[in-house]
Length: 267
Length: 201
Ligand SMILES: [Zn+2]
Ligand SMILES: [Zn+2]
Image (cartoon, rainbow over all chains, first blue to last red; front, side):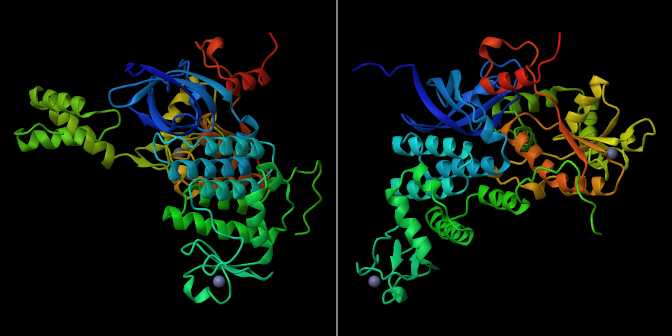
């Protein structure tokens, strides 16, 4: 049998960084080929480090990694995409950070899920183009589906019956929508509107750009965010930390370009 | 992990040292045995210095830098431009900017940067206090000097958004190439920003 190669290559998105000692960092990478893994970047916090900018969180990089006794070690890193416009947009970076946290929380180390990696890369590209929070909704729903947690939304999850075109109960514990008759057995959940049910169904068929291009009225978007957020919370057994940040940024209101001469305040 | 059979005071010292950043169990052990061998006066001086840093150092109630008295020397000085406030992540960053000798304004120490994934939100930083300073008048320009990292940039954008309605000018440090860095290994982000900040020769 061939000996295990001493180094391996991977392309991935840097999910997070923890500092180690004076100058090193441990970085968590989510890659298509290796899945999620941790490795040490030696000396990366020094200003002259060659790898520094290539291993920032929210960077897509090609890395060369050497097997180590306890932790693997990065030996080379090269940026594929630095997501500059994404980083320079507060709302978009909040959404992106939330997606990164979901990947980190939902995946196990060294379990490759190439479809999830492709989804992450596609979603970051869309967020960078300014596609907004619907990208995150699609990301959440697809991530749940890829991990085997897809909610059943085409009919009643309990009796299999067709759902009339009316609001229904979305129950994370039952694993999908429940019809009026089955509601008592469906456990805790949230009543969702016809608009949200249609969006949940559309997300199963659409591509990320198609879903992101959908015009969703504000209240349906908010309702979908809450409903999907409850699915995430159920499977994660907690809320992702970054959700509070997304909400906090949302509460600030979009940046308005200030007019050259502001009219006098009526006060 | 303290070695089996080490007397309790030594084991305890090893354990305390290993809580320090960058100190592994081996280094902690080395430090503990070093203290054990050191002259008694040295050991007492270390203990006193440790106690003093907690007892005598406070945060300045205005800029939140570390100081022996509140307000700190910088905030109290008549020689500083009170219309300029430089916002940094850590007290150490104040020293770094001061060392350049090129800044005559005041500071504001946030005590960290937003790190949404690790759960560090705006309420854990001294952001409200900064808003309070700007609302109180005097400040004409806020210079964001957070780190050029993902967290530092997010913090800078977030603070900028909060300050915007107050009508204060908000700037940030130009981002160039670190001196001594090798162009060949520079990442695109740093390089493209350095290009934008280029200057006439
Ligand atoms: Zn049913
Ligand atoms: Zn002060």
